[in-house]
Image 1 (cartoon, rainbow, N blue to C red):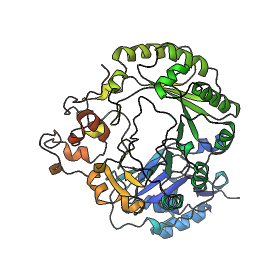
Image 2 (cartoon, one colour):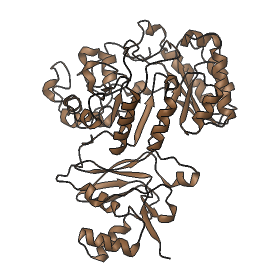
Image 3 (tube, helix red, strand yellow):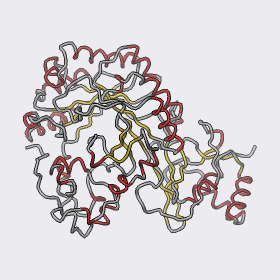
Image 4 (cartoon, rainbow, N blue to C red):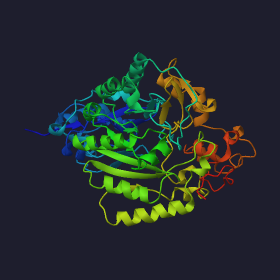
Length: 497
């Protein structure tokens, strides 16, 4: 029997008016073989003609059938059609196709043998990717974001001394029926990542119903981070969703946790029991430890290491430095690690890494990124900012902001999902004004106003508004990102002394 080929429907095709995308879905991968077949982090912008070509693989077809359909649709010879088809076959790694003067990248195994398909097919047609104008250059999607984060509540089980949340706003939460409509619209728009955060997600009364809803659309993913001690019934319920779970644990010492988190004397034993239950039920998890001057260093890290080291389900241990936020307590300076503290932790981590196979993530050099970039936002160190470039952040009451750390700051609110659709918010005047800033809107005292790289820098959205506000104050929102070499010295120091 002749081999048949099909689009790997783990990937989603999405048209974006003037170009198209190949996106990784959040479809559940059930075994190692499926995991090897796909690329779980792809967001590739591609020429619409190539999306049309991929649509012809929507259903299983033999090589002869594909030659017929390619030749007919593109009005080319069968020999040319065969060459076109072969570009998509037998690609076990990421690959690139040059077409129309542009390079389009594709994830591995975008087209596979029909027998290897492990998800139901989606029926695409070439007409879905028709376009009147081509724009492969613009970074920000035209139609809708690529991801959404919904902050389901602003409720916590702790009161951390290093908390970066704005807990002052009391709001009416989105009705669950409206959330269901938003999730459906996101699915219809091929928004593959719909992440849920808190507050504390597990303190949301309908958390399991929400997870079921997202999983029904193949959109459940992301990280469930919690400081809530979890009982056995909840862990059993969580296990079936195959989420990444993160437990926050800053110390093993009960008195230390009471001081850092403002919790009761039994909290330490309860959170330890939570981790033991995750082990018992074979739920993979990671641990995050946030360091302040309240942690006794390196003794607290030693005690944590002795507890974590034998655990079989622990995937990684993140050791983090508490950072100043826009909402930090006025006395945050007394909690902030000193330069000597950071060096002490660095030495300890290096010693432990040499004797363990545990994955410990520790990034002490983040502050070296400041004031160094000389070629605009493309040269900024660190992860690229997704705020209003590819992501929307929905607050518990339905208001939409560009970044989770900006909360209800009116300057950065861009819409309201109680009244608007996702598309309307994404293309609102407020969203577009922030996404495509104009030089005349920057004051002369801002180095950005007269910078020769202004257009190039703003064309690649990557400014961290939060760091600008933290370092220079809200009145100086138009200052350069502090990673830029043109940025002035901090008014409010973000560095460890």
